[in-house]
Amino acid sequence: MAKPRVLVLGGNFAGLAAAQEIRRLAQDQVEIAVMDKKPYLLFVPNIGLEVLADRDPAASLLMLTPPILHEDDIAFIPGEVKEIDVDRQTVSFVPSERPGAPSQETSYDYLVVALGARLAYDQIEGFAEHGHSVSDTYLGNRLRHYLYHEYRGGPIAIGSARFHQGTMTQDLIPTAEAACEGPPVETALSLGSWLQKRKLGGPQQITLFTPAEVIAEDAGKPVVDALLKLAGEMGYQYWNHTIDVVRLTAEGIEFADGRTLEAELKIIFPDWVPHPFMQGLPISDDRGFVLTDRTMRHPKYRNVLAAGDAAALTVPKLGWLAHLGADVVARQIAADVGRLDPEEATLPFRPSVNCIGDMGEHQAFYINSDAWWGGEKAVLRVGRMPYLMKKQYKDLFFRTHGKVPNWGMPLAEFLIEHLS
Ligand SMILES: Cc1cc2nc3c(=O)[nH]c(=O)nc-3n(C[C@H](O)[C@H](O)[C@H](O)COP(=O)(O)OP(=O)(O)OC[C@H]3O[C@@H](n4cnc5c(N)ncnc54)[C@H](O)[C@@H]3O)c2cc1C
Image (cartoon, rainbow, N blue to C red; front, side, top):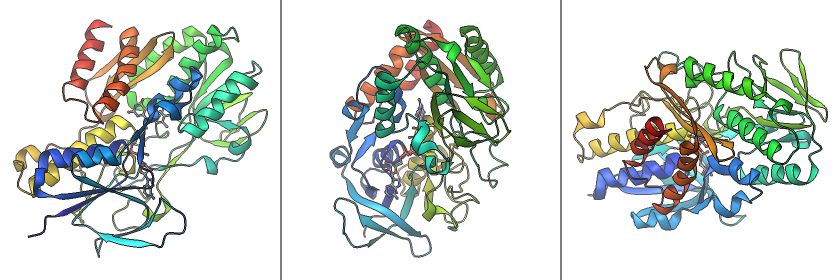
């Protein structure tokens, strides 16, 4: 009999982890293919570090995925997904290596949606002319050029546009007003130190803003209070409840609450928006994120699973949560094909925030918290150890081809929480 065919859409953090973990747990009981429009993983969290060090992030943060998948007998399909038909169990795509390819169709027994989200800079008026960010290598290099060649020492604004979360998971997770606020906090703290080091000023010329009542609220109140106290003592300005970014101009940012913030440099994190072809599908929530229960399966289409930023349950949009979601997905499929005890497989998705942010001068902050979801954990540490871990983690990830050993994260947590 033919083996069930698992089609994983997206090959970055969630897709790569899901495909590898499915192979590890389901062994040879499934055929696996990963489809992505690009044949590499972009290690997004370290782009800011490279930018401030005046290094090209494209030179060190891309990992070629097809040979890595090949090691586990996982096929790679270079294709841009255009349509998903969950009733016919097919995906339409256009092969992405050369322009001009005709549309193709492929079928699946299991579909894992790990396509991330669109970072909707194009919805912010004035971003193209006046905005900066660090979410991809192009924007990273553009900011690097600005900082090292054009920056005139003026005020800097860093923060998020409003995130529009779907309403169909409200019984499972809280609602966030920003998609991912670790990056703006990290960018502000590390840029303040960069300004000081280059004698261009310091934290006092940086304003950190948020559309929400408090920034990074998903880190939990005790952590946010401590972080804001620390940033205030360092001299950072802070604007909350800006509601949304309306427009960027040469002079600054206009917010939906009516205020205007003067800024020469505007570093923005936009709304995380589902891909247009995901909107209105029977597997999507009212925004276009894939609706799942805590087993990361769609409640009705049980052969459709999701992980990472594409999943409605993944809030905030964090690589760490992509990894946790991918593990749940793999256990589900392994149990279906009889390779895992169903009880072990039903360990549900238990979200938490686990992140490390650069602060410059070989210092970093580390957050490990599940307080936003009603848990007890709310750890914040600042020091050299988290910084070493942030640098080491990327090297370990590349060296192990994405298979950071299981002890990697608990050991990192132990070292940071007990030795910092
Ligand atoms: C500046 C910044 C810093 C961050 N720092 C951290 C951090 O320190 N820690 C942390 O945990 N998280 C961090 N995050 C969040 C983290 O990067 C994301 O949560 C993570 O990348 C999500 O992984 P994913 O695989 O779900 O989606 P993505 O990484 O977005 O990958 C989606 C994949 O799908 C592919 N794809 C998309 N559309 C199509 C299509 N139509 N057809 C085929 N392929 C397609 C893309 O090419 C891509 O490879 C940060 C994010 C940003 C922007």
